[in-house]
Image (cartoon, rainbow, N blue to C red):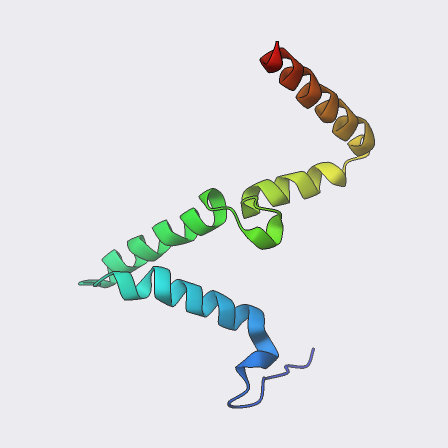
Length: 100
């Protein structure tokens, strides 16, 4: 395995990490004052869980990363085509019931 570092002063070479770092800085680090290391860990963990489990991401089709991962696992399942078809039928049925 060979490590490849980005060139100094070229954050665009790793835009995904730079985007995450900016979001974390703006939404978490700049919003809180950490009096202790324990408080910092707790606050950052709370933010991380919200970002990964609650907040939808536009890059993931406005789903949470957890929903996106669960759907990906379902798509890899041997019964995936059947399951997706069944879910679509259930969704249509519930929509029709709501309209009645």
